[in-house]
Length: 119
Image (tube, rainbow, N blue to C red; front, side, top):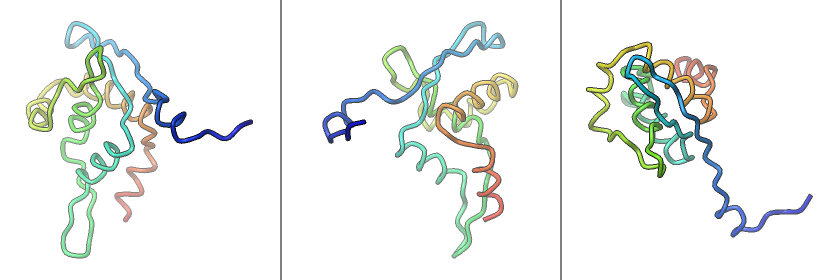
């Protein structure tokens, strides 16, 4: 096995994608895993700081992740951060189906969320 160099690492297209059927919406969507920076942003968005304490805040968690991971054929996000509130008004079943795929593709484990709640 050889060691990779900088150029090889930076040229690799390593973000997984998966198409998900959403019968509630009458079609399918493309879901892309988060980048490292996007994952950090997502995790920061579900933590509320109160002084020196950080509290897990799951409010609209599904819509937040779906908004960050649903992309078009070119990999561009379909939703902005401003769309999260209205997206959260869509079917919980549909959002959860996409959320689960986005969670898996992004390496977000249920244990990660449980750990955030504990800490």
